[in-house]
Image: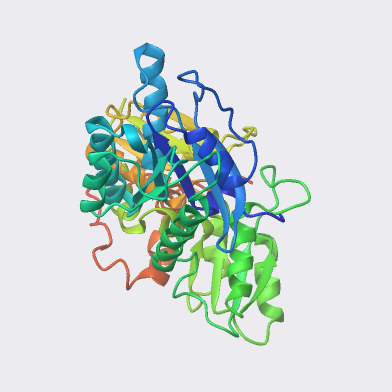
Length: 428
């Protein structure tokens, strides 16, 4: 893997009304003709994403969206897609024809600025286009009102490229400030000269000839921490430990072999899973841990949503479509109505009693937090594949020990009033 995955790149969403110059601006910012430019309203339909290097910052994704004032039945679907892209942005660049900015523009900016700030701490800046004739801001009272609200406004010309460098600098400044506050995958867990054991099963779901993204990203972060790693399959853990002169400082396992890992890795070695690491990095671990308790309250016919942030070809023993549903039914003894989705988050989640999300390795942090906020607004408990699997296997306490200081609100579940079903063994 030679390029930074889109999920690890900040997403810069260009939003605004039809014909405000969004597509032209994304071409100006990227220096390429990525977006179709036309005077016809509604030229941009679905959000269009382009990964690129925004130097000197680094890899980013620019997202062009449909006009927020698009009308009609099809227009409503386009604006809904644009709003969804905005809600998962790391930075929103609201594009407005500077001389024609009106109350509707102001309302859009206020609404989306409040929304993204609340959901994921992102910000909104304004690009005032069609500034070909003057270095001054276009003459609109609404532009002045924006500056009084503390919104950064940058006049640009997509024809002369005037103002584009200044807008780039503003974007880089916002992203740099945001990056400084974001956590890392192994934050506070690995120090220099430590040894980390990664337990990686090679089964039907393992891609031929390579490792999956969570494993690769973990290895890279260990190396960036000036630590060392040893990668081993679950069947060789005992043998590898017997060969080492000193025990690893941390062990990280694939969730599907967590039971075997807990049996092989001594209690003295901190142990967790890749999925739990990503739930902490991309989402909110405390929320997922609280949500997993809802498994014990499920009743017959309750709806459970298993949702993945990416689409992939399902294998015969797929984790979401086969394994987790089987373990859930074995553990609860209930006839559950289980739905599995991949890619986009379902529009209607109100009828679900529990949502179990994947680790989110292919989603941005903003996307994960937007999904958590949506579930919370409906009062639906949410957990994560890794947390749920470890809970169903009876080893959640063990794999959460590395995060004990962070999870001060978490306490072990009370003893059940009746004998639970035996923890299911992992099928290999």
